[in-house]
Image 1 (cartoon, each protein chain N blue to C red):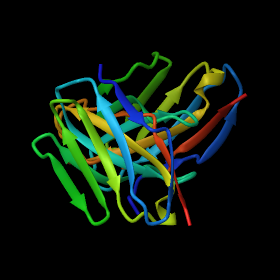
Image 2 (image 1 turned 90 degrees about the horizontal axis):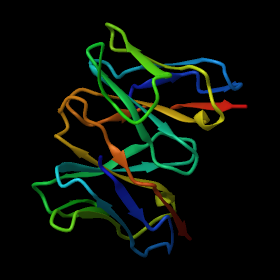
Image 3 (image 1 turned 180 degrees about the vertical axis):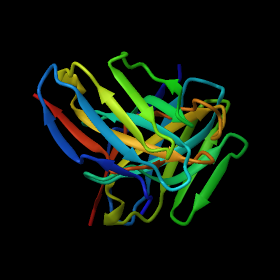
Length: 116
Length: 110
């Protein structure tokens, strides 16, 4: 089955600096890659996603890049703010969003701390 | 507000007991997935229901079972609870694919 590795497990950055989280996946058939932000005691919330037919996607201070050949994708947060402090999870899915029995395989998470 | 609600929010059980967790999906969403999130880890897929039928299952033993009702709400049942079942159980609903998570039910097994 699919395996998703996420690094680093913790990341401390100064406010205003950039943060980068990297994930690798094992199943070349995976074609949808969402990123979730989970604050303490809260639900995971989708912050950005990318499909395998796209190499990069950006939404304000957040961007995601995908390298299908190397089977890795990354989350980039620029101009970090204290409210960006949370745990971030990458995930991979094959078969498309509407595929029957689709399941997300999550990485282990990255705890991001933005120091003021 | 995503509209996915779960109950109970917290509960404590002892080993060997049984538990039922409930999920109301977002209005119109016909697909419900359940995930287990152990402390400090990413969510792990348990199973998915689509129009009242199990539609995919992860690496969980048969003592994890579920139901989906005609209104698309869902239940997760766990029998013969073990200490390692202590976790946050997340329900997620979807219609066209994007998952919307509930706040979860935190289960502690003593």
